[in-house]
Image (tube, rainbow, N blue to C red; front, side, top):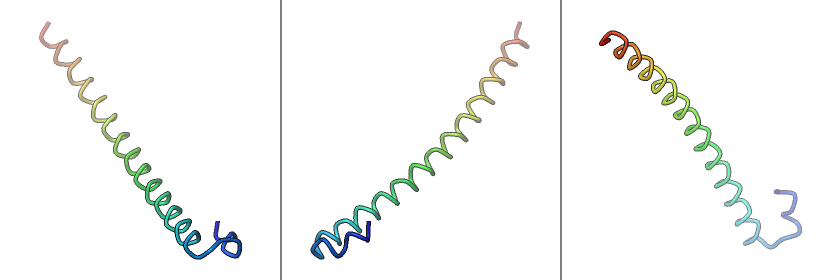
Amino acid sequence: MTFLACNVNPNKEERIQTLENQIKVANERMHDMEEKIAVLEKELNALDEKLVELKNTDQ
Protein backbone atom coordinates (compact mmCIF):
# COMPACT_ATOMS: atom_id res chain seq x y z
CA MET A 1 0.00 0.00 0.00
CA THR A 2 3.03 2.30 0.00
CA PHE A 3 2.22 3.28 -3.59
CA LEU A 4 -0.59 5.40 -2.12
CA ALA A 5 1.92 7.67 -0.36
CA CYS A 6 1.74 10.34 -3.02
CA ASN A 7 -2.07 10.48 -2.77
CA VAL A 8 -2.49 10.81 0.99
CA ASN A 9 -1.22 13.07 3.71
CA PRO A 10 1.61 11.89 6.00
CA ASN A 11 -0.75 11.09 8.88
CA LYS A 12 -2.77 8.76 6.70
CA GLU A 13 0.38 7.15 5.29
CA GLU A 14 1.69 6.66 8.81
CA ARG A 15 -1.61 5.09 9.84
CA ILE A 16 -1.56 2.81 6.80
CA GLN A 17 1.98 1.70 7.68
CA THR A 18 0.93 1.08 11.29
CA LEU A 19 -2.03 -1.01 10.16
CA GLU A 20 0.14 -2.99 7.74
CA ASN A 21 2.57 -3.72 10.56
CA GLN A 22 -0.28 -4.79 12.85
CA ILE A 23 -1.60 -7.12 10.16
CA LYS A 24 1.87 -8.64 9.72
CA VAL A 25 2.20 -9.24 13.47
CA ALA A 26 -1.32 -10.68 13.66
CA ASN A 27 -0.57 -13.07 10.80
CA GLU A 28 2.65 -14.21 12.50
CA ARG A 29 0.78 -14.80 15.76
CA MET A 30 -1.95 -16.70 13.95
CA HIS A 31 0.68 -18.93 12.33
CA ASP A 32 2.29 -19.55 15.74
CA MET A 33 -1.08 -20.44 17.23
CA GLU A 34 -1.83 -22.81 14.34
CA GLU A 35 1.47 -24.60 15.03
CA LYS A 36 0.67 -24.83 18.75
CA ILE A 37 -2.80 -26.19 17.98
CA ALA A 38 -1.29 -28.87 15.74
CA VAL A 39 1.07 -29.95 18.54
CA LEU A 40 -1.79 -30.04 21.04
CA GLU A 41 -3.92 -32.11 18.65
CA LYS A 42 -1.08 -34.65 18.32
CA GLU A 43 -0.71 -34.80 22.10
CA LEU A 44 -4.46 -35.24 22.53
CA ASN A 45 -4.51 -38.06 19.99
CA ALA A 46 -1.64 -39.77 21.82
CA LEU A 47 -3.53 -39.46 25.11
CA ASP A 48 -6.67 -40.87 23.50
CA GLU A 49 -4.67 -43.87 22.28
CA LYS A 50 -3.23 -44.40 25.77
CA LEU A 51 -6.72 -44.24 27.25
CA VAL A 52 -7.95 -46.90 24.83
CA GLU A 53 -4.94 -49.08 25.72
CA LEU A 54 -5.64 -48.68 29.44
CA LYS A 55 -9.31 -49.51 28.98
CA ASN A 56 -8.38 -52.63 27.02
CA THR A 57 -5.92 -53.84 29.67
CA ASP A 58 -8.47 -53.33 32.46
CA GLN A 59 -10.97 -55.68 30.81
